[in-house]
Length: 313
Image (cartoon, rainbow, N blue to C red; front, side, top):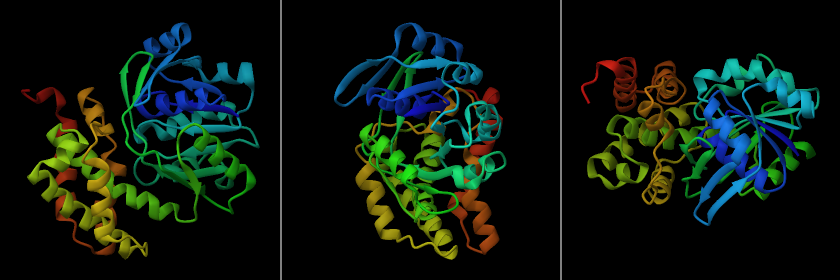
């Protein structure tokens, strides 16, 4: 399969490397020149629990290079910070043809709606993944997750053989993927995770596992997930609080992963708070569901990211 990753950072780099290792023709498009140059000259290093691989990939800072060599893609995967979804989708139009599918498993709520401004809804696949990655340096990514379970579905229309083929391709690359009509439910289940690992993790600067093991962190997790479930249930989505709470502690207590928001904060970048905790807060207000814990975390993150240069340490 011809695949272009729009964004080759922690997740885009890790998934792109896995797809390349499985024999797909993969392009990695990123704006970080040193990262791209390293991949072009030395390949992409992927560290996993099984060991290290150095993979040959196509890398560029210009989407037009992809089209000039390989034309339209079978699949384009949007893997950028949600603040850049609009711009990166417009850039990707150079390689999106009439038969191209565009996949987003980005964090939070609303990315598919942004992509749909430029791509027909029946060509958009949305969903969520438990996979996780970290950039170790230029041309070097690490799979930091403990679970790769991924759920996807077309934004509009039925699951087609083409979508099933994409599921199989991702699964063969090491991401256990299934097509499911419960994509929106899966996205809100992932919000239970992200609001904790990203929200509490970014404020405290702790790994996912450290948040779980810390008694105060565990107490916050319980209240945050309770609020997310309450909002999801009010939307008509069937999400059980005890199930999501137990799942969170089971999966993330052993995790050494630093969340995407931690990584953003370390680089003094704008975070994805608006599509994660902010989405829960806005839906809570709209539906009349109190979300005091998420509201406090939302405002704290906004304050931190708006004042990186003013912080004393």
